[in-house]
Length: 384
Image 1 (cartoon, rainbow, N blue to C red):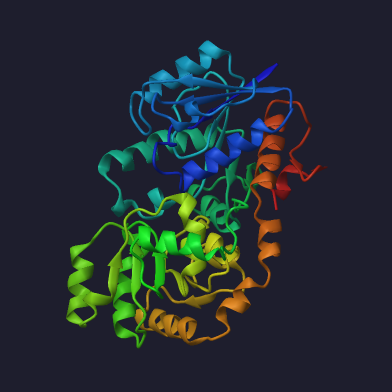
Image 2 (image 1 turned 180 degrees about the vertical axis):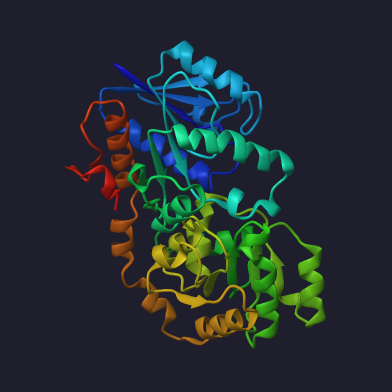
């Protein structure tokens, strides 16, 4: 029986966003398959995955090395060798320089290369030395949008024939929540205003939260702005200079199980990021029926289609215009509810798992070429 190892060390207690969500959904999807392959999942001892029950073909391999560390360069190859692994899937930017088996890598975006000024010297060296080497040695590269595929080809000069697009998905739990008791409970739990604009994001520079606050302050919008980020004194001082400090709310971290309710009750969701490999939050918000403002940049137009309100992320006045448009459109929520089923069909974790499994089988020599939706496609076609 063939053995595939998947690195899941980024899945930590208390959070399941971004890459961790992608990896969890992949492992969960593979647990539902009967592909004649054993999946060995690399975890640290505190992984919440260890607290769940899994079928026999999902096995766990505990290692001590932390995610993104020099120690993993030695411990992971040894662990792969000990289990007789045939294929290693590095579902993030983390991979050993030397592996005793074939490698597939998922590159979600190229932040680390395109925006190196936002990363530490250690991370810059790690990405340029270890990650680039692994990319070049990988049998296939998976990525989450055609924008990211183009970025990989442009930046790393990689053969596009080995790069496959496997979109992220939206969980079925992201749907409009109408239970008034649940909504009231979540509103009280996070101390949310009766009406509000919402931004769920970290506060890294490319997320553009500072530009959003400036735009909000310049706009005529009176609804409070809720930022699901840590309290930032600079943002509060900026809002104070416009006499809008009292309208800026910093919510504590919103647990994933509560996000559908928060998305469902917000008047407008805004995501002004300048660089995204995919951008899952606005898609999740749209599936909950929230009107959405997003930046017209990177992968976001590809993901949200034409149902969002777009703004130039580098022009705070244009973001202000988009906020005003979203808040003042009385039929915005009704329009947002149209087409949710189309998004679910296009962005499905089940579809992502199926495509990824097809690439596993191809890399292992079990199939002559990658499988997409039950059909074989030539390598140069990529996954659509």
